Image 1 (cartoon, rainbow, N blue to C red):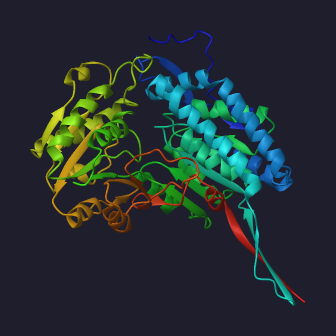
Image 2 (image 1 turned 45 degrees about the horizontal axis):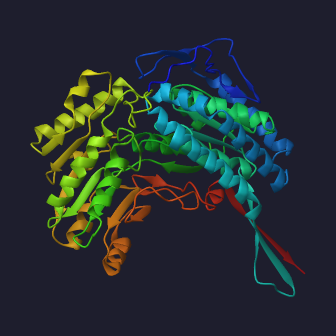
Length: 487
Protein backbone atom coordinates (compact mmCIF):
# COMPACT_ATOMS: atom_id res chain seq x y z
CA UNK A 1 0.00 0.00 0.00
CA UNK A 2 1.50 3.29 -1.11
CA UNK A 3 1.07 6.35 1.08
CA UNK A 4 -0.12 9.47 -0.74
CA UNK A 5 1.54 12.76 0.10
CA UNK A 6 -1.02 15.00 1.85
CA UNK A 7 -1.62 18.21 -0.03
CA UNK A 8 -1.71 20.12 3.25
CA UNK A 9 1.67 18.79 4.45
CA UNK A 10 3.66 21.80 5.63
CA UNK A 11 7.44 21.47 5.69
CA UNK A 12 9.23 24.28 7.52
CA UNK A 13 12.57 25.27 6.00
CA UNK A 14 13.56 28.37 8.01
CA UNK A 15 16.20 28.11 10.75
CA UNK A 16 14.82 27.98 14.29
CA UNK A 17 16.50 30.71 16.37
CA UNK A 18 15.53 32.11 19.77
CA UNK A 19 12.20 30.29 19.89
CA UNK A 20 10.95 31.16 16.40
CA UNK A 21 11.49 30.46 12.73
CA UNK A 22 13.77 33.13 11.33
CA UNK A 23 13.85 34.39 7.73
CA UNK A 24 17.12 36.14 6.79
CA UNK A 25 16.85 39.36 4.79
CA UNK A 26 19.21 37.98 2.17
CA UNK A 27 18.35 34.37 1.42
CA UNK A 28 20.84 31.93 -0.11
CA UNK A 29 19.02 28.73 -1.04
CA UNK A 30 20.01 25.10 -1.59
CA UNK A 31 17.70 23.39 -4.09
CA UNK A 32 16.06 20.19 -2.86
CA UNK A 33 14.68 17.16 -4.71
CA UNK A 34 13.30 14.13 -2.92
CA UNK A 35 14.92 10.76 -3.71
CA UNK A 36 11.34 9.49 -3.61
CA UNK A 37 10.03 9.86 -7.18
CA UNK A 38 11.96 13.14 -7.53
CA UNK A 39 9.33 15.18 -5.66
CA UNK A 40 10.04 18.88 -5.24
CA UNK A 41 10.90 19.79 -1.64
CA UNK A 42 11.31 23.23 -0.01
CA UNK A 43 14.73 24.76 -0.57
CA UNK A 44 17.15 24.78 2.35
CA UNK A 45 18.16 28.20 3.65
CA UNK A 46 21.95 28.34 3.64
CA UNK A 47 22.74 30.18 6.88
CA UNK A 48 25.76 32.46 7.00
CA UNK A 49 27.76 34.28 9.66
CA UNK A 50 24.87 36.55 10.60
CA UNK A 51 22.41 33.73 11.33
CA UNK A 52 25.04 31.68 13.15
CA UNK A 53 26.04 34.65 15.28
CA UNK A 54 22.38 35.33 16.07
CA UNK A 55 21.87 31.72 17.17
CA UNK A 56 25.04 31.70 19.29
CA UNK A 57 24.13 34.99 20.98
CA UNK A 58 20.61 33.66 21.60
CA UNK A 59 22.08 30.53 23.22
CA UNK A 60 24.52 32.62 25.24
CA UNK A 61 21.79 34.88 26.57
CA UNK A 62 19.65 31.89 27.56
CA UNK A 63 22.60 30.35 29.37
CA UNK A 64 23.67 33.54 31.13
CA UNK A 65 20.13 34.39 32.20
CA UNK A 66 20.17 31.07 33.99
CA UNK A 67 16.48 30.32 33.78
CA UNK A 68 16.89 26.92 32.15
CA UNK A 69 20.08 25.71 33.82
CA UNK A 70 18.58 26.58 37.21
CA UNK A 71 15.30 24.76 36.57
CA UNK A 72 14.74 21.87 38.96
CA UNK A 73 15.34 18.39 37.53
CA UNK A 74 11.61 17.71 37.92
CA UNK A 75 10.67 20.76 35.84
CA UNK A 76 13.19 19.86 33.14
CA UNK A 77 11.89 16.30 33.07
CA UNK A 78 8.29 17.39 32.67
CA UNK A 79 9.15 19.65 29.72
CA UNK A 80 11.03 16.83 28.00
CA UNK A 81 8.24 14.32 28.58
CA UNK A 82 5.75 16.82 27.22
CA UNK A 83 7.91 17.22 24.09
CA UNK A 84 8.12 13.44 23.70
CA UNK A 85 4.33 13.26 23.89
CA UNK A 86 4.00 15.95 21.21
CA UNK A 87 6.39 14.08 18.93
CA UNK A 88 4.29 10.92 19.37
CA UNK A 89 1.22 12.86 18.35
CA UNK A 90 3.01 14.10 15.23
CA UNK A 91 4.85 10.84 14.52
CA UNK A 92 3.29 10.04 11.14
CA UNK A 93 3.87 13.56 9.83
CA UNK A 94 7.52 13.58 10.99
CA UNK A 95 8.09 10.10 9.54
CA UNK A 96 6.69 11.21 6.19
CA UNK A 97 8.90 14.31 6.17
CA UNK A 98 11.99 12.20 6.89
CA UNK A 99 11.01 9.62 4.28
CA UNK A 100 10.55 12.25 1.58
CA UNK A 101 13.86 13.89 2.39
CA UNK A 102 16.12 10.83 2.84
CA UNK A 103 14.42 8.06 0.86
CA UNK A 104 14.45 5.73 3.85
CA UNK A 105 11.39 3.49 4.15
CA UNK A 106 8.26 5.11 5.63
CA UNK A 107 7.53 2.07 7.78
CA UNK A 108 11.10 2.12 9.09
CA UNK A 109 10.62 5.70 10.25
CA UNK A 110 7.18 5.02 11.73
CA UNK A 111 8.04 1.77 13.50
CA UNK A 112 11.72 2.14 14.32
CA UNK A 113 13.56 5.45 13.89
CA UNK A 114 11.06 7.99 15.25
CA UNK A 115 9.95 5.74 18.16
CA UNK A 116 13.62 5.28 19.06
CA UNK A 117 14.19 9.03 19.16
CA UNK A 118 11.16 9.40 21.45
CA UNK A 119 12.62 6.72 23.73
CA UNK A 120 15.89 8.67 23.81
CA UNK A 121 14.08 11.81 25.00
CA UNK A 122 12.18 9.85 27.65
CA UNK A 123 15.30 8.01 28.84
CA UNK A 124 17.34 11.16 29.39
CA UNK A 125 14.36 12.97 30.93
CA UNK A 126 13.98 10.19 33.49
CA UNK A 127 17.75 10.16 34.15
CA UNK A 128 18.38 13.80 34.97
CA UNK A 129 17.25 13.55 38.61
CA UNK A 130 19.58 10.58 39.09
CA UNK A 131 22.80 12.50 38.47
CA UNK A 132 24.66 13.01 41.75
CA UNK A 133 27.73 15.00 42.73
CA UNK A 134 30.40 13.30 44.85
CA UNK A 135 32.45 14.05 47.95
CA UNK A 136 35.93 12.94 48.97
CA UNK A 137 36.18 10.80 52.12
CA UNK A 138 35.04 12.95 55.02
CA UNK A 139 37.85 14.59 56.95
CA UNK A 140 37.35 16.37 60.28
CA UNK A 141 39.27 19.47 59.12
CA UNK A 142 38.40 19.62 55.40
CA UNK A 143 35.74 18.87 52.83
CA UNK A 144 36.18 18.12 49.11
CA UNK A 145 33.29 18.22 46.64
CA UNK A 146 33.28 17.21 42.98
CA UNK A 147 30.45 18.54 40.82
CA UNK A 148 29.70 18.78 37.09
CA UNK A 149 28.89 22.04 35.31
CA UNK A 150 27.65 22.83 31.78
CA UNK A 151 30.00 24.23 29.15
CA UNK A 152 27.61 27.01 28.11
CA UNK A 153 26.91 27.26 24.37
CA UNK A 154 27.71 24.05 22.50
CA UNK A 155 27.28 23.03 18.86
CA UNK A 156 26.19 19.76 17.31
CA UNK A 157 26.45 18.64 13.68
CA UNK A 158 24.48 15.52 12.81
CA UNK A 159 24.29 13.07 9.90
CA UNK A 160 21.54 12.46 7.36
CA UNK A 161 21.06 8.69 7.49
CA UNK A 162 18.94 8.67 10.67
CA UNK A 163 17.91 12.31 11.19
CA UNK A 164 16.50 12.31 14.73
CA UNK A 165 18.15 9.50 16.70
CA UNK A 166 21.76 10.83 16.69
CA UNK A 167 20.36 14.37 17.04
CA UNK A 168 18.48 13.47 20.24
CA UNK A 169 21.50 11.52 21.52
CA UNK A 170 23.35 14.83 21.43
CA UNK A 171 20.67 17.41 22.25
CA UNK A 172 19.02 15.72 25.24
CA UNK A 173 21.97 15.31 27.63
CA UNK A 174 23.43 18.63 26.44
CA UNK A 175 20.29 20.60 27.26
CA UNK A 176 19.42 18.72 30.43
CA UNK A 177 22.90 19.45 31.84
CA UNK A 178 22.11 23.16 31.44
CA UNK A 179 23.81 24.00 28.14
CA UNK A 180 22.35 25.91 25.23
CA UNK A 181 22.84 24.06 21.95
CA UNK A 182 23.12 25.14 18.32
CA UNK A 183 22.29 22.21 16.05
CA UNK A 184 23.23 21.98 12.40
CA UNK A 185 21.60 18.99 10.65
CA UNK A 186 22.84 17.74 7.29
CA UNK A 187 21.34 19.51 4.29
CA UNK A 188 20.14 16.02 3.26
CA UNK A 189 17.94 15.69 6.37
CA UNK A 190 16.99 19.05 7.84
CA UNK A 191 13.23 19.31 8.12
CA UNK A 192 12.33 16.91 10.94
CA UNK A 193 14.76 18.50 13.42
CA UNK A 194 13.21 21.91 12.74
CA UNK A 195 9.81 20.42 13.56
CA UNK A 196 11.09 18.81 16.76
CA UNK A 197 12.76 22.05 17.90
CA UNK A 198 9.43 23.83 17.54
CA UNK A 199 7.66 21.12 19.55
CA UNK A 200 10.24 21.42 22.36
CA UNK A 201 9.69 25.18 22.50
CA UNK A 202 5.92 24.73 22.60
CA UNK A 203 6.40 22.24 25.45
CA UNK A 204 8.08 24.88 27.62
CA UNK A 205 11.76 24.95 26.66
CA UNK A 206 12.90 28.58 27.03
CA UNK A 207 13.98 30.69 24.05
CA UNK A 208 17.53 30.21 22.88
CA UNK A 209 18.17 26.89 24.63
CA UNK A 210 17.68 24.90 21.40
CA UNK A 211 18.51 26.54 18.09
CA UNK A 212 18.66 24.85 14.67
CA UNK A 213 20.55 26.47 11.82
CA UNK A 214 20.31 25.13 8.28
CA UNK A 215 22.73 24.99 5.40
CA UNK A 216 25.61 23.27 3.66
CA UNK A 217 28.96 22.07 4.98
CA UNK A 218 30.26 25.65 4.80
CA UNK A 219 27.59 26.63 7.34
CA UNK A 220 28.79 23.83 9.58
CA UNK A 221 32.39 24.99 9.29
CA UNK A 222 31.45 28.54 10.29
CA UNK A 223 29.56 27.20 13.32
CA UNK A 224 32.48 25.01 14.39
CA UNK A 225 34.89 27.96 14.16
CA UNK A 226 32.61 30.44 15.94
CA UNK A 227 34.27 31.93 19.01
CA UNK A 228 31.06 31.72 21.02
CA UNK A 229 30.85 27.92 21.00
CA UNK A 230 32.65 26.05 23.77
CA UNK A 231 32.23 22.44 22.67
CA UNK A 232 31.65 20.66 19.33
CA UNK A 233 29.80 17.36 18.86
CA UNK A 234 29.72 15.61 15.50
CA UNK A 235 28.19 12.53 13.87
CA UNK A 236 29.30 11.74 10.32
CA UNK A 237 32.21 10.61 8.19
CA UNK A 238 35.79 10.28 9.41
CA UNK A 239 36.91 12.65 6.66
CA UNK A 240 34.63 15.41 7.97
CA UNK A 241 35.54 14.54 11.56
CA UNK A 242 39.21 15.17 10.82
CA UNK A 243 38.38 18.55 9.30
CA UNK A 244 36.38 19.49 12.39
CA UNK A 245 39.32 18.51 14.61
CA UNK A 246 41.56 20.80 12.59
CA UNK A 247 39.35 23.90 12.53
CA UNK A 248 37.36 23.75 15.79
CA UNK A 249 40.07 25.24 17.99
CA UNK A 250 41.56 27.80 15.61
CA UNK A 251 40.13 30.70 17.62
CA UNK A 252 40.08 29.02 21.03
CA UNK A 253 40.41 25.54 22.53
CA UNK A 254 37.15 23.58 22.61
CA UNK A 255 35.89 20.24 23.79
CA UNK A 256 35.44 17.97 20.74
CA UNK A 257 33.50 14.71 20.48
CA UNK A 258 33.39 12.75 17.21
CA UNK A 259 31.32 9.74 16.12
CA UNK A 260 32.68 8.85 12.69
CA UNK A 261 31.32 5.57 11.39
CA UNK A 262 33.12 2.33 10.75
CA UNK A 263 33.74 -0.98 9.05
CA UNK A 264 32.16 -3.15 11.71
CA UNK A 265 32.78 -6.88 11.71
CA UNK A 266 30.44 -9.82 12.26
CA UNK A 267 32.48 -12.83 13.44
CA UNK A 268 31.04 -16.35 13.34
CA UNK A 269 33.04 -19.18 14.85
CA UNK A 270 32.60 -22.90 14.29
CA UNK A 271 31.10 -23.09 17.79
CA UNK A 272 28.08 -20.99 16.81
CA UNK A 273 24.93 -23.12 17.07
CA UNK A 274 22.55 -20.44 15.75
CA UNK A 275 23.62 -19.96 12.13
CA UNK A 276 20.07 -19.29 10.88
CA UNK A 277 19.52 -16.61 13.50
CA UNK A 278 22.92 -15.08 12.81
CA UNK A 279 22.17 -14.91 9.08
CA UNK A 280 18.82 -13.24 9.74
CA UNK A 281 20.35 -10.59 12.02
CA UNK A 282 23.31 -9.92 9.74
CA UNK A 283 21.12 -9.45 6.65
CA UNK A 284 18.85 -7.04 8.49
CA UNK A 285 21.60 -4.89 9.95
CA UNK A 286 23.67 -4.50 6.79
CA UNK A 287 20.81 -4.16 4.29
CA UNK A 288 17.71 -2.66 5.98
CA UNK A 289 18.60 0.98 5.26
CA UNK A 290 20.57 0.30 2.09
CA UNK A 291 23.68 -0.04 4.26
CA UNK A 292 23.50 3.64 5.21
CA UNK A 293 24.17 3.04 8.92
CA UNK A 294 27.44 4.00 10.61
CA UNK A 295 27.60 0.80 12.67
CA UNK A 296 26.37 -1.52 9.89
CA UNK A 297 28.19 -4.90 10.04
CA UNK A 298 29.75 -4.59 6.59
CA UNK A 299 32.45 -7.26 7.11
CA UNK A 300 31.52 -10.91 7.64
CA UNK A 301 34.41 -12.90 9.15
CA UNK A 302 33.49 -16.57 9.36
CA UNK A 303 35.13 -19.89 10.16
CA UNK A 304 35.84 -22.04 7.09
CA UNK A 305 34.00 -25.03 8.54
CA UNK A 306 30.62 -23.29 8.68
CA UNK A 307 30.86 -20.81 5.78
CA UNK A 308 28.96 -22.81 3.16
CA UNK A 309 26.01 -23.56 5.42
CA UNK A 310 25.88 -19.99 6.66
CA UNK A 311 26.02 -18.41 3.20
CA UNK A 312 22.99 -20.45 2.09
CA UNK A 313 21.02 -19.03 5.01
CA UNK A 314 22.38 -15.53 4.35
CA UNK A 315 21.39 -15.53 0.67
CA UNK A 316 17.87 -16.53 1.59
CA UNK A 317 17.58 -13.75 4.19
CA UNK A 318 19.11 -11.13 1.90
CA UNK A 319 16.28 -11.60 -0.59
CA UNK A 320 13.97 -10.04 2.01
CA UNK A 321 15.81 -6.69 1.74
CA UNK A 322 15.35 -5.77 -1.91
CA UNK A 323 14.73 -2.00 -2.02
CA UNK A 324 11.42 -0.66 -3.25
CA UNK A 325 9.27 2.46 -3.12
CA UNK A 326 10.01 4.22 0.21
CA UNK A 327 6.35 5.26 0.49
CA UNK A 328 5.07 1.71 0.03
CA UNK A 329 4.05 0.11 3.32
CA UNK A 330 4.89 -3.30 1.84
CA UNK A 331 8.53 -2.31 1.36
CA UNK A 332 10.92 -2.47 4.32
CA UNK A 333 13.79 -0.90 2.35
CA UNK A 334 13.79 2.47 0.62
CA UNK A 335 16.30 4.20 -1.65
CA UNK A 336 19.77 5.72 -1.46
CA UNK A 337 19.67 9.29 -0.12
CA UNK A 338 20.84 11.00 -3.33
CA UNK A 339 22.60 10.48 -6.67
CA UNK A 340 26.04 11.33 -5.31
CA UNK A 341 25.81 8.64 -2.64
CA UNK A 342 24.50 6.19 -5.26
CA UNK A 343 27.50 6.95 -7.49
CA UNK A 344 29.89 6.45 -4.57
CA UNK A 345 28.44 3.03 -3.77
CA UNK A 346 28.50 1.98 -7.43
CA UNK A 347 32.13 3.12 -7.68
CA UNK A 348 33.10 0.76 -4.87
CA UNK A 349 31.05 -2.04 -6.41
CA UNK A 350 32.98 -1.62 -9.67
CA UNK A 351 36.27 -1.59 -7.73
CA UNK A 352 35.29 -4.89 -6.12
CA UNK A 353 34.47 -6.40 -9.50
CA UNK A 354 37.68 -5.07 -11.07
CA UNK A 355 39.69 -6.65 -8.25
CA UNK A 356 38.11 -9.97 -9.30
CA UNK A 357 36.42 -10.62 -5.97
CA UNK A 358 33.65 -13.17 -6.35
CA UNK A 359 30.20 -11.73 -5.67
CA UNK A 360 26.46 -12.29 -5.73
CA UNK A 361 24.06 -9.46 -6.58
CA UNK A 362 20.39 -9.59 -5.59
CA UNK A 363 17.90 -8.29 -8.17
CA UNK A 364 20.15 -6.27 -10.46
CA UNK A 365 17.09 -5.06 -12.38
CA UNK A 366 16.29 -2.43 -9.74
CA UNK A 367 19.21 -0.35 -11.01
CA UNK A 368 16.83 0.72 -13.76
CA UNK A 369 14.54 2.28 -11.17
CA UNK A 370 15.38 5.52 -9.41
CA UNK A 371 18.50 5.37 -7.19
CA UNK A 372 17.83 2.09 -5.40
CA UNK A 373 20.87 -0.14 -4.97
CA UNK A 374 20.57 -3.95 -4.85
CA UNK A 375 22.19 -5.88 -1.99
CA UNK A 376 25.64 -7.18 -2.94
CA UNK A 377 27.66 -9.87 -1.18
CA UNK A 378 31.32 -10.28 -2.12
CA UNK A 379 31.49 -13.83 -0.83
CA UNK A 380 35.22 -14.16 -1.55
CA UNK A 381 37.11 -10.93 -0.90
CA UNK A 382 40.84 -10.65 -1.44
CA UNK A 383 43.05 -9.61 1.47
CA UNK A 384 44.22 -6.42 -0.23
CA UNK A 385 40.77 -5.35 -1.47
CA UNK A 386 39.90 -1.67 -1.18
CA UNK A 387 36.43 -2.76 -0.05
CA UNK A 388 37.76 -3.86 3.33
CA UNK A 389 39.00 -0.61 4.82
CA UNK A 390 36.85 2.09 3.19
CA UNK A 391 33.46 3.03 4.61
CA UNK A 392 31.20 2.49 1.60
CA UNK A 393 27.96 3.38 3.41
CA UNK A 394 25.93 1.19 1.10
CA UNK A 395 24.41 -2.33 0.83
CA UNK A 396 27.72 -4.09 0.17
CA UNK A 397 28.91 -6.93 2.41
CA UNK A 398 32.40 -8.43 2.23
CA UNK A 399 33.25 -11.94 3.42
CA UNK A 400 36.55 -13.23 4.78
CA UNK A 401 37.32 -16.66 6.18
CA UNK A 402 39.51 -17.98 8.97
CA UNK A 403 40.72 -21.25 10.46
CA UNK A 404 41.97 -20.09 13.87
CA UNK A 405 40.59 -17.48 16.26
CA UNK A 406 43.93 -15.67 16.22
CA UNK A 407 43.52 -15.27 12.48
CA UNK A 408 39.97 -13.93 12.97
CA UNK A 409 41.21 -11.27 15.40
CA UNK A 410 43.96 -10.24 12.99
CA UNK A 411 41.39 -9.78 10.22
CA UNK A 412 38.91 -7.97 12.49
CA UNK A 413 41.50 -5.46 13.75
CA UNK A 414 43.11 -4.84 10.35
CA UNK A 415 40.78 -1.93 9.55
CA UNK A 416 41.40 1.70 10.56
CA UNK A 417 37.95 1.86 12.18
CA UNK A 418 36.71 0.60 15.54
CA UNK A 419 33.02 1.31 16.08
CA UNK A 420 31.07 -1.93 16.53
CA UNK A 421 31.54 -5.69 16.25
CA UNK A 422 29.71 -8.96 16.83
CA UNK A 423 30.88 -12.35 18.10
CA UNK A 424 28.72 -15.40 17.43
CA UNK A 425 29.76 -18.41 19.53
CA UNK A 426 28.23 -20.69 22.15
CA UNK A 427 31.53 -21.21 23.94
CA UNK A 428 32.04 -18.80 26.85
CA UNK A 429 35.82 -19.16 26.90
CA UNK A 430 35.97 -18.37 23.19
CA UNK A 431 33.67 -15.36 23.57
CA UNK A 432 35.83 -14.07 26.42
CA UNK A 433 38.92 -14.34 24.22
CA UNK A 434 37.34 -12.26 21.47
CA UNK A 435 35.95 -9.62 23.83
CA UNK A 436 39.41 -8.88 25.17
CA UNK A 437 41.17 -8.90 21.81
CA UNK A 438 38.82 -7.08 19.46
CA UNK A 439 39.27 -3.34 18.88
CA UNK A 440 35.85 -1.69 18.90
CA UNK A 441 33.76 0.59 21.08
CA UNK A 442 30.90 -1.89 21.40
CA UNK A 443 30.86 -5.69 21.11
CA UNK A 444 27.61 -7.58 20.51
CA UNK A 445 27.48 -11.21 21.65
CA UNK A 446 25.14 -13.46 19.62
CA UNK A 447 23.19 -10.34 18.68
CA UNK A 448 23.56 -7.03 16.84
CA UNK A 449 22.10 -3.60 17.49
CA UNK A 450 19.64 -4.75 20.13
CA UNK A 451 21.16 -2.74 22.97
CA UNK A 452 19.09 0.01 24.55
CA UNK A 453 19.67 3.60 25.69
CA UNK A 454 21.46 2.48 28.85
CA UNK A 455 24.45 1.21 26.83
CA UNK A 456 27.09 3.78 25.70
CA UNK A 457 27.69 4.09 21.95
CA UNK A 458 30.89 5.24 20.25
CA UNK A 459 34.15 4.01 18.84
CA UNK A 460 37.95 4.17 18.75
CA UNK A 461 40.56 4.81 16.06
CA UNK A 462 39.03 6.40 12.91
CA UNK A 463 35.57 5.88 14.39
CA UNK A 464 36.25 8.84 16.67
CA UNK A 465 36.06 9.42 20.41
CA UNK A 466 33.37 10.35 22.88
CA UNK A 467 30.20 8.47 23.78
CA UNK A 468 26.51 8.86 23.05
CA UNK A 469 23.69 7.20 25.02
CA UNK A 470 23.55 6.02 28.63
CA UNK A 471 23.89 8.06 31.77
CA UNK A 472 27.58 8.47 30.89
CA UNK A 473 26.57 10.84 28.07
CA UNK A 474 25.96 13.58 30.64
CA UNK A 475 29.73 13.60 31.24
CA UNK A 476 30.31 14.51 27.58
CA UNK A 477 28.34 17.73 28.00
CA UNK A 478 29.82 18.94 31.28
CA UNK A 479 33.14 19.56 32.98
CA UNK A 480 34.30 18.62 36.47
CA UNK A 481 34.48 21.43 39.02
CA UNK A 482 36.40 20.58 42.20
CA UNK A 483 35.66 22.40 45.45
CA UNK A 484 37.82 22.17 48.54
CA UNK A 485 37.06 23.55 52.00
CA UNK A 486 39.77 23.75 54.67
CA UNK A 487 39.04 24.60 58.30
